[in-house]
Image 1 (cartoon, helix red, strand yellow):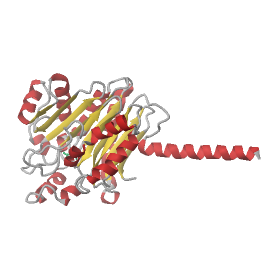
Image 2: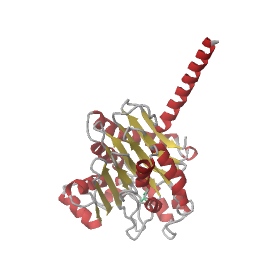
Image 3: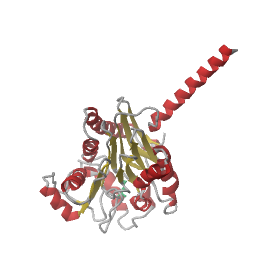
Image 4: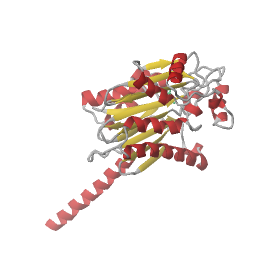
Length: 349
Ligand code: ASP
């Protein structure tokens, strides 16, 4: 009898361990072990569905996500800082025409490309952001320069570009972002053209892929950092700025809690102070990163604007647990932990 009880106990133990590691794979929420370093990225949340995506397109996105996250992973593995990992990882995604950031930025109402970006250092709570720039090749580098080389947190438009030039950052002709053939030009203009006469807030835009890029990382010194870079929302006008360059909405990092990067309909992320809200729920209510992210993205955000608060976040806590939470059909995303295990996802699976 005793033997039987022992065997049953062992079997239950084995089954529950298996289930835990399955869950861990999806959201890397294995709280039992502290990771030395880890990194998580997103390439935008939106209407990303398997049935609408060709195998070829899926492979292209997966390859770029993998290339990007491996850059950050290698930096962290070699003892580099989370800030460097975030910046260099985002550079890969900004240089790709696949995402709505840097080179692949969507078109504004007047047919231009305007970029927003932000970065935050979880150790010092220092932060930098840039908004509405049109000629800076890598807006995340500008955000970092604002953080480290200026007394300010956010610079915008002409002034931000003047500062970027002074800092020796790479400046490009606006055509770099719009050239046909070099980018997903037709995808990006199609929506813009169709919506020229329509309101910004229509379902077509609501349904389109947003495509912002973001990264959060924990380095071996226990420092968290997060960054976000975007072309904003298709058809935006009047110098519209979304959540991506707003510290607390699009990006937040605090070594005591977590590092977060958001993507989705920016107006709602600003109103919900999404990135900071997740950190605050951890700090003041002792929620885990997973609980806090779920609460904000699945419960609080959709209630703002009667269900229009769509999007997601990627985040990492001080123990290296990673979360990718979204309320849209899909989100481009990937994680890597110090074990070298890689996860890449696109759909709601
Ligand atoms: N949050 C961005 C914005 O509203 C868009 C996105 O994430 O794709 O500007």
